[in-house]
Image 1 (cartoon, one colour):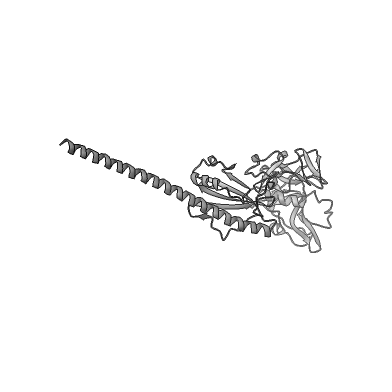
Image 2 (tube, helix red, strand yellow):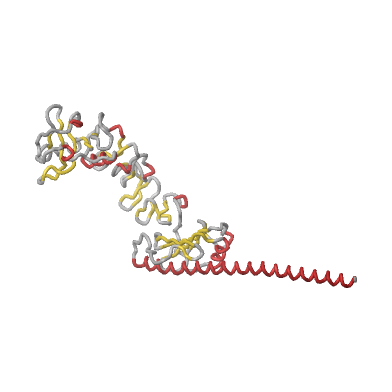
Length: 362
């Protein structure tokens, strides 16, 4: 009786041992399967990067000023949900980025070390070959290549890849993924407070970059100014200042009594050049008045019955369009203090009044 109980106990232990061994083999098998799939995924990604690098290198070789790649024949996403993008960089470089890479697959890609790539950045950090850099389950890998697809020790000398200006040194800005000189001057890069004059960096009075201008942009001669109201802040527009410069001026320059509603008449309270008058009207969603708006005749100097809404605005105003076929100058509306308004133009001392007319918008 005792022998039967021992035999049954031994059988139970053996059965438990077999089950434990089967469980261990199952776990190891699943782990091995996952590792195999991770290697398959990393190989698939690497093959895709290789294929794309050849395509993009050929595009860069055939177009030295390429600003974007043609990827129409390449899928944006491949099996596994990995998303690809690419962009040309300066200095004959380009980059290929793959998104949504799992942590373990990222580690395999670090180990594989694509030799044709000059640089590998993982989530913005430069890889040194240590797979510990892969910390997230949705990782971004950016490979940088030369258009010749050949590694070289000095290819990235004096070149820093970047994602924002914060990644660059002083006087450099992030442009197309590479830190580039903000004020290039021949072979030199001018420092803050300098500008490039005749191929040499020189200290100038005034601005050196747009950041030095509270309102407007910095021109090459170190003067803050503007080309249109879009260069100014929302409370100003671009007005002619002197023979070479325009400056941002405030909203208070709308004439009293103007109707700022859509379709309403509006005038400036300061005189300006015709191109500034156009810019002034554009700023407020209007256009420079035309003969059709005014109901004015085509003949120069003809008096007419102008809309009553503008009769209170005495003075001289720019009107869109030339005076006649023989005069390419901008037309001028004259509103006298008494009497009917009339159209002036080339023969009306326009040169003298070139910057002494108001803007009339509708």
